[in-house]
Image (cartoon, rainbow, N blue to C red; front, side, top):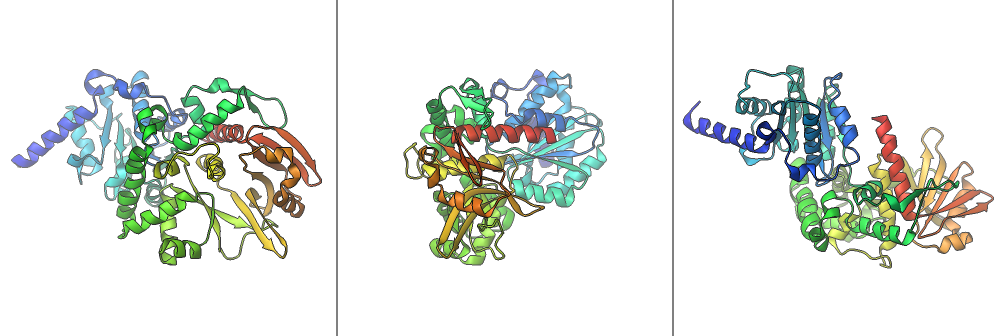
Length: 480
């Protein structure tokens, strides 16, 4: 090795020692250990330490949802369980000095820094931000096959691209784990607000609250700032969310991640489309209307929507008619931000009487279902003769193609007081006698209303959001 390469290698090893302080101190830096744990940590740790299956774990998720912190929490737990700290290696692949170095060489250099170069056994190796290494999936699969007694974990922010490559190249070698933005259930736990929620024994909901007004204040706070762990605890960031969320999350995805992954040349065009959608989250769109309003060709719109959905920034929800039948040709669809906090970062925080509060409450509810991994829902919209209407969420049994559950998302008590005003819902139910559960959210009210089509259950939207995100988290946990 020449002098220059020897010098670079020495610098790399110094950097690795700096990034792995537990090699010398025997513990993880307190800046990470004091940070609250994500609810998903137990599941991730269990998957990561299950040595009965020889696989690498791919930790995916949007930017700034806490992937790196969860890795540090896992390292802290490994050390507490008795694993030798010098058997734990952390490498952030996007560190400039590691540019274009293969995973195998990084593993070798780390062992050299540990003065344990000839030993390959019993290591836990974490490769953070792995998407910045070309052909990472080929490298990682080879390492899983070569170093059979060591465990490899890779994380990245380009979730869909990682998953695609994981499926294509990692069959039988990779286990995927998606870390979503904070759900309302996690937000309540993060903030230590569990005492606000009480168990409920009525038929409407298993949960109630001791103070609905206080819970609603926190729900608005969640909509504005609650998707990202750091924002929840930082008053500085909440005073200027655009500086943090927009610059560090949105811009990096739109201006760096997506262009590099998909070869997008006109990044301003992509940014323009996303801003247009974010301002109208929860609205119905068509390719034609988006093309006209954003001034972008229809075929380009289709590609951009695929990229934005792949980056976990938006979720497209397809339309059905009043008979719960899917459209033969997709002419219109709804688009939701996967995290309502994204809108706050781009524009301004909303208040409970804001003109956009309805669509953002709807976005927040959809984000609970999306982040819980549930996507088997549609919205109903129809216009036939004099009959027209819309229902916000419809779950369809894929086997029978019949509607089985519906929900209308409202931020008002008006319909709990006057259920007959829910004309679109009543029309839809009259066409779909298979519906078993009918929910309408309110601002503060529980209630029941019997109709010939079934019993409508009214529930405060903040409690509904807590309930479904709690349920979906524990369902996901049991599946893992």
